[in-house]
Image (cartoon, rainbow, N blue to C red; front, top):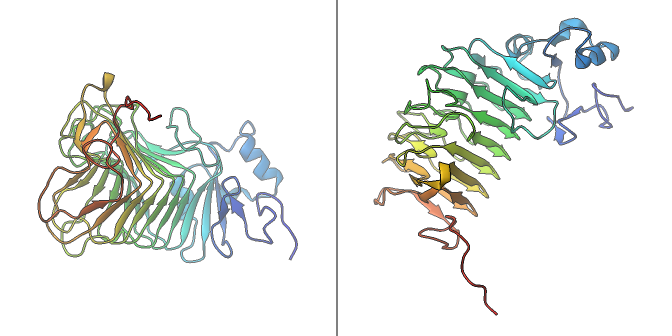
Length: 342
């Protein structure tokens, strides 16, 4: 089989490679739907797609219209060129094995005001910008932000289906005064069917917009309320960010029984709450109010601006760690003032 040129494939024997050459979606890609911020000659991405022979009906200016054109269960891909895409309604990502790839590369630390590839809303009635109920979907190299200034604007992203994969994704919520004090607000929701997801090198939360105030809220929130909670997920090398002057704010909220299940691993993850002049520390990373059997393992994780991993200190708390003792708990940062040995 011959080699095909971008945007149809990059030296991959017919298997398109996206996101700065990180890797293919799978063994063969279905139809590709492209996103640009405008269909105008001044948009160089649109111009180059036209020159490459991409039909105009395969190019879209919103995620909603691009996703609507995909077909489930054949590895269709929405390929988003750099820019900020303002969505005005919650998008139900409900087709199995359909994928989103940002074409700006793996650095997704910006927001809608300084975008690489950013899917966001500033509408005041969007609870979740994207809600996934399609199985085995993948999301690469994009930022999803909920900038709605209202208590109804609860999260950037809701995961409620099994087998999904995330690589270099950023999720931003609680960015405005309207949502910063809502206890149920977060940057990322995981609901009951969000089984065994994998998050690689993702960022959950933000520390440069509004200051969080909701006691026992989290930038990551598990939202299942009955039956079996989601199981066997892992966060690898992920960064959890917050800005708060309220000690009772948490980083991960597990608010009720059945919210979470067994086998959750946080591997080489970093948790930070920024406080002006580091005036306060949060009480805990994990607010774990789940009394049903579950398990969370922290492997080589670290935290700054937070007193403890969890302060429930009760028999039905199921959080373990392997980190060496640095402060009052493994991996919790303190000032490195000790004299080195000779």
